[in-house]
Image 1 (cartoon, rainbow, N blue to C red):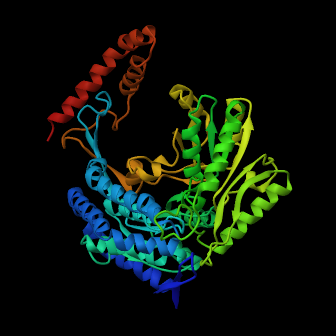
Image 2: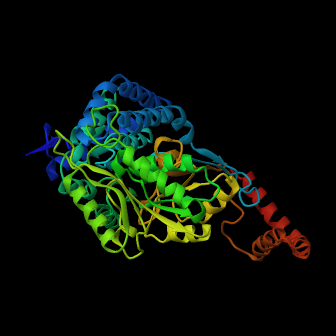
Amino acid sequence: MTLSSVAPATGEALGTVAMASQHDVLTAVAEARAVQGLWAQLRLSDRARYMARAAQAVIDEADELVELICREQGRPRTEVEIGELLPAIETLQWLGEAGPRILSGERAALSRVLHPLTRARWSYEPLGVVAVLGPAAEPFATPLGDVAVALMAGNGVVLKPSPHAALSGARVARVFARAGLPPGLLQVVQGHAATGGALVEAPVAQVRFTGSALAGAKVLEECARGVKRVVAELGGTDAAIVCADANIARAVEGIAWGAFANAGQSGGSIERVYVLREVADELLAGLIARARALRVGDPSDPETEIGPLVGGERLGRVVELLDDAVAQGATLHCGGPVDVAGFSGAFCAPAVLAGVPAGARLAREEAPGPVVAVTVVDREEDAIAAANDSTLGLGASVWTADRYKGERIAQQLRVGMVWMNDHHVARSAPQLPWGGVHGSGIGRARGAIALRTCAEPKVVTWDPPRGKAFWWFPYDRALARTVRAVARLRSTRDADRERGLREGAAPALTVVARTMKSLRRR
């Protein structure tokens, strides 16, 4: 069977790929595992060179990649350059530069009271084979980042791209093949949910998933059943808090971009805005004007700012949420479904609403399109409480001229990321962890923590091969009194420490003499 790739803007068939059966999935995992053992033996610096070569491959294939992603995903050409190409290059180059240092392991300084002669260190060992399930809305940079992190940590990888982005996902493997990656180490399996389910159930050591909360819940359930590590990013209903001292012109531009870039389909798009009453009219008027000015149309036109949604079902869901909000009293100032001459895709003009009641679905559910709801509040505390009133917690932004105020608000927001006077910063910065709390997922993509969660810490210690540790058998009263004295010496009270010295000196000498005697034996 084959899977067809279709351009969302026109319905044009772009190509086909072979769909993987359950047997194909198991074969792919086995083949990746067969090569992974040799890959794991490479020095970190050698793996890093493959990352640098892959970055160069992305640069060399930039024209083809932009054309393909633009057509297959519907993202505007300029935005593909900004949101797919540059983050992919940045991620690969950062892994090549920082990866060896992050994964090099560390020496541990142990207590010389309990471990006087022990030397200890830990290293990061590969997990084995990692499964990566990519999203439809960000079909290249996001799965490539997960693949690269897993490879840099010494793992084999099986990638299942979104069925809406089969060709873009396949290009991830081509980039690494061009970098000289050992054949078989990175496998690609194509298909729908059944293929993804088969991959999650396969004998993989970790699953890295980006997608909807519904699909993610099934992934998490299967990983729990199989006791597998999992990193899952399940989206969010990100909030922006606009304080009275904010630069409103910057806030309007930044919120418009954070809400409407990628037609509002990116994980972490702004969907809720809480603005202080003193500046609410100015912000709302500016946001409406900016939304109306954005150009909706042909994604291949470099001046287009809003392309089609990935699928018609997304537009249907957006319409449902808008209609429900309006029926419950909200005001739709602009936006909604729109026809674009010469194109059959599911286009949606950026929608700005005000007065969305708490009971509306839009106040609770993630909107898979360019939709933002503006709510006026009287106090910053009200904005924080409203932003936290969600089952999701991916990211949020705070717009203020006072950095310390912004940091105070950030501490109170129950999300994984807070950006001040910007939004989506971590998506294009591979040095920063990306991920959320609550229903937005588990674990982090990007950053040093992502590399380390793709590996298993292994502790190795060394003790001299003579004698025996003082706490080994046989036990006696002298050992018990010595250990109690050591505990008292660690007290914060002077009286306890004095008692430890007074009562522990004699038994400690006995234990030390016994230990030294054992060291002299062969």
